[in-house]
Every structure is written in structure tokens, then in C-alpha cells.
Image 1 (cartoon, helix red, strand yellow):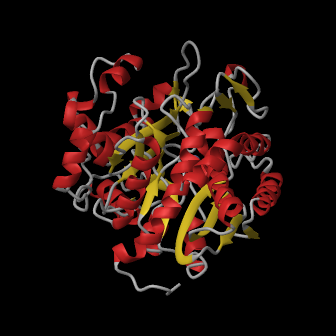
Image 2 (tube, helix red, strand yellow; image 1 turned 180 degrees about the horizontal axis):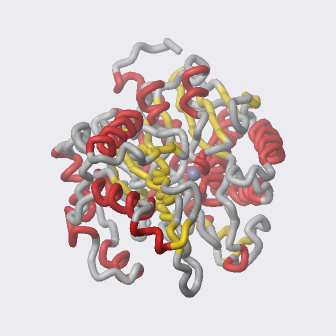
Amino acid sequence: MEEIHEYIDDHWMEAVEDLKRFCRQPGISAQGTGIDESVEFLVELMREYGIQTEVLPGEGFPFIYGELPGESRVTLLFYNHYDVQPPEPLELWSTPPFEPTVYDGNLRARGVSDDKGDIVARLLAIRAYLEKRGTLPVSVKFIIEGEEEIGSPHVAAFVEKHHDLLHADACIWECGGVNWKNQPVIHLGLKGMLYVQLEARGASTDLHSSMATVVPNPAWRLTWALNSIKDLDENIRIEGFYDDVRPPADEERRLIDSISLDEEETRQALSLDRFVRGVTGFEYKARHILEPTCNICGLDSGYTGPGSKTVLPNVARAKIDFRLVPDQRYDDILARLRRHLDSNGFEDILIDPQTEGENPARTPLDSPFVSVVAEAAREVYGLDPVLVPSMAGSGPMYSFAHTLRLPTALIGVAYPGSSPHAPDEHIRLADFVLNAKHIAAVLQNMTSYRQASGKPQGVP
Ligand SMILES: [Zn+2]
């Protein structure tokens, strides 16, 4: 491994130049800008790094597939995305978001932490092996989508269709890094997502508010419906909502207890007196990592401008996201939400899903792959990694963890100050180098993975 790490130490600056070129490509999926150019650029870049790469059209923006056979047929699959979040508000950036800027050992650009830095760190680790040994210890595959930042609506169908092509033994996800203490953090799951709009309709048009004597007001209808969904103690009242929530295993409880989530710093930074239900300590962490949510993202009805306008609106809408945890299913929760509204007298409230749903996924702590990634982290960072059962966020991991049956771990180049999705997104270049070495060590340690997992040798 020594020579591999040395290569990375000697050549990371060249990879950073490639990362800067990549970050000049906008690739904003929400706005549909720069997609073709991003695809073209990344395909070319992956080929420069020795990966056999092709573009596979999906129903939405294209997928990029890459592979490189190694000495062993044990195969590690990398999941990434080439799209980025919109850069607005532009005036809050210290330098333009698509003009990558190096300052104080950092690199600032939209997409650099989420997740172009991850992609290039992976490429750098691969190049180190090819240059020093002429081959990789294990085989690798890449699947890189272009719609992660808009909810990955086409990943599930794509994975179903390309099941054989994507066959692998384990998966490294995008998005991860170190905590404030510079310990490597390994997340093992993502929550799922159901995003709906609820709509109440009243009269055929807005009316003079004096008509409120006799004309039903959809804003009240919606308010009453929302009120039935969650109580004042933050319990979600949809019948059976919690039925499939997996209780934490003892090992998960122990891990969560040992994690530091900067609770007090977060509370103060957000100017909050208390968190939901007043949770602190273990309850705070367990709630954040393991619990599902029902969150109102937006409410809209009638007149909300300055001053007064006495109006009786004819429509009211709420956008709601549910973050789901194993073993909840988004289609089941959607059906339960419909039944809940109907049985509470709200048959008139329309439910309109706003995105393709995502099911939650979590890799078991006792998976041998978790040991592989954790041991590699220990070797490179010289510190015990922090294992976290799940991120609080969502992603299309279910297709990989369940459809493809891959143990999956999230590691990456970010640190808690990276500001992904926000102005002045950046990474620390030292984290980029460490992550490339971590990836290299995972590739090396994967050679012993097949024995550990008990799968037969040589079967692709
Ligand atoms: Zn990402």
C-alpha cells in the first residue's frame, strides 16, 4: 500500500486540476442546464483515468457507466451523481460558483463536496494502482446518475433494467467525510422519501370574505386535515405509520450513544430554546438518525402580501415530505395517508405525489463490508471511524442495498463546514487526499472480502 499512498501524495494536485475542470461544468438538474456538457466531460475524464466508460440513456438525464476489471473478480460498485444543486443566491458566494477557487488549502465551487470531489478522489485512487501496479486489486464499476439532486426519479427502473450489468459485491456511496474532530465518519444507510402535495378546493373562484358565512373555506379544510395528521406531541397519527419502523438493535443503540452530534452547538447556531419534544442526549441522536418525519415544506392559500385583503380563497395547498426509515415503504405510507384522510372526513382533500418515492435502506452493522471500510479508515486516518447507522437525509440506496443486495457504505471528501447545497460550498484539500487513500485502502482490503462474506470465488 505504501507505494499507492506515495503516488497519491505526489500526484493529488494534478487530480485537483481535473476536479477544477469538472467543477466548471454547471450540470444543474433542477434547471436542466449544462447536462450534456457535464456528461461529455465526465466520460472523457473517466477514460483519461483508464476506466472503460459509456453513456446509458435512461428515461431522464443519462446515466454514465464505467468499469475496470482488476486482479480479482470481487467487484466494488461506486454510486455517484454528476448533477449539482442550483447555485442561487449568487450574491452570497465569495467567488462565482462555477469558477473553482483554491484558498487556504480549500477548494470552493458548487458541487465540489457533493459530490464531484468524491468522484475525482475515486479516480485518483484507481490511477495510483494503474500507475504503480498496472492493475487494480479488485474490479470496479461506476454508476453515475444526473438526477440525484431532484430525487433520483429514474434510478429504481434503471437498476431493475441493468441488474446484471451492475452486479457487484459491495457499494461505496457518495457523500460523506470527517466530523469536527477529523474522525472519518462511515454512514450505513439513507432514509426514504414520500413527497406529496395536499390540496383543498372550495368555490369555483376566490370570493368576498363576507361569503364565509355560507361558503366553505379550503384553507380551514386543509388546516383541519393537517391537524389530524400530527398531534401536539409530534406523534404522527396516520394509522399504522410506525408499524414497520424497525426498533434499534442493541449494537445500533450502543453506536448512537457513542456518536457526538454537536447538539448544543446546533441548538445555539439555530437560535432554538429547545428541540422537538425537548429531546437531548441519546434521545436527540436516536430521533435524528432513526426516526421518520412528517414535515410541512410549504403552505399556500389566499392573500399573503402586505396589508389586508378580505378574501375567501378557493384553493389551499400544502407540500409535505415524509422521511422514512426501515422497513417503511413509500407506497404503503401513501395508501395509509389516503385512508387516514378518508376516515377522518377529508375525502375531499387531494393527494398529489410530487416526486417518485424512495424506500429507506440500511446496511447491517455486522456486514463484513462494514469491517472492510472501517479497517481501511483506521489505516489511513489513524483514528477509529465513527459508524452511523443512517444519515438523516434520503437517497436512492434501496435499489442498491435491496434490489442488487449490496452492502453499502457512505464515505467522501467533505467535512461539517463544507456547505453542500449552500453558498460557498467547499472542501479541504487535505480531506480530498485522505479520502483518495481511504478508497485505495478499501480496494486493497476488498481482496479478502469474498472469503469473509463466504461467497464462492470467481463467480461474477
Ligand atoms: Zn450528493
